[in-house]
Image (tube, rainbow, N blue to C red; front, side, top):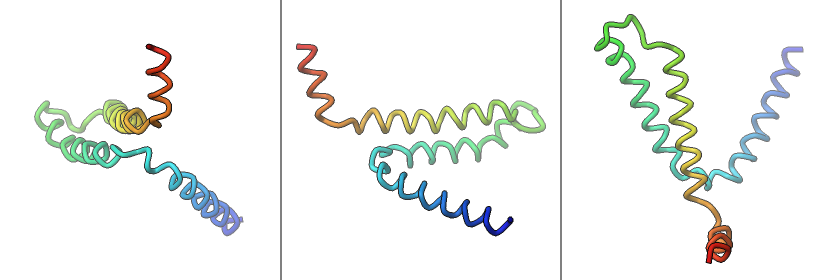
Length: 94
């Protein structure tokens, strides 16, 4: 049972890799979002110490993490739209 579950997990990860490899060009700003995320994670200790907290609130940390990743992904998708879609929009507005 353990072996088969691991085999199916690896096969699922392999399929996910190929699906993501096909669209990775759309996420041009994901590296910058991950860099900002790493800075945030590294600075949580200092922020908590600055405010006198024992640790940074988990709900805030999770929310900020999702917001940074979502902003990076959405900005990437917005900036890498197909030119045909932009030409169609421009023609409709004229």
